[in-house]
Length: 136
Image (cartoon, rainbow, N blue to C red):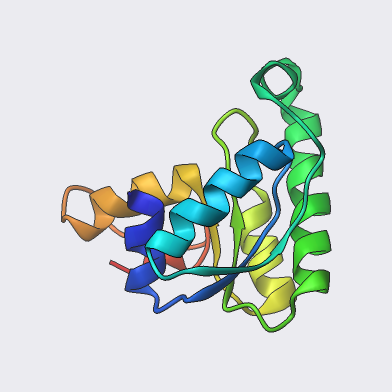
């Protein structure tokens, strides 16, 4: 729910998704976002299931976030934003760099949960880690 709320907060309606997940997971994500009136205009895949995700090193997770984010945005420059779904990898370091590269907000499971705390006044805004975390 934090992902949908954060996208709504920034007025995002069309997204590119840099996903490492298997098609079945990606299809469920597309349906979930469609129910929230968010259109997925591009979706990557690497066919991963939870086991592969949990076995991935931190370094590989960061590298994959950059790779998939860039692939998704090249496929859909018309997207309002980029979403890097999943919690087991570490996409946060990629957020400010990808935002600078494409001039569009980047959402992750982690930054949307942190944004919820900022938005609700529990935590202060954070500069330097992407548009979302600096926007209560």
